[in-house]
Image 1 (cartoon, rainbow, N blue to C red):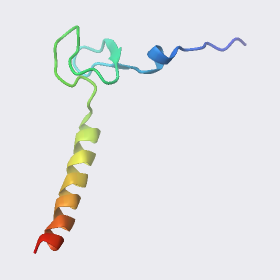
Image 2 (image 1 turned 60 degrees about the vertical axis):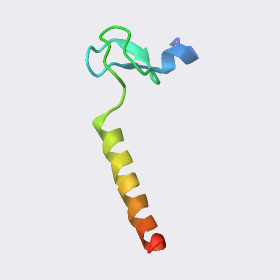
Image 3 (image 1 turned 135 degrees about the vertical axis):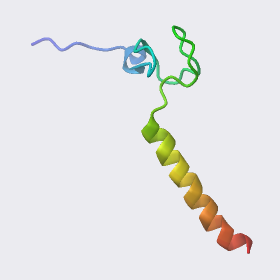
Image 4 (image 1 turned 180 degrees about the horizontal axis):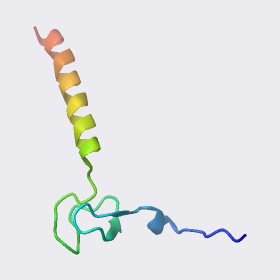
Length: 64
């Protein structure tokens, strides 16, 4: 069987969460529908929020 080789650019393509077109992973705005941060998922937002709360909680002990 022949394996299909993907270029580096194709590996970094993901679907826009709004219009489902393939766009680059780190795009700030979708070129098709115009939504901001089209590749950020709810999971990424949730994990980042939890980490920030934990860091602030730990820092609060050092400040007092």
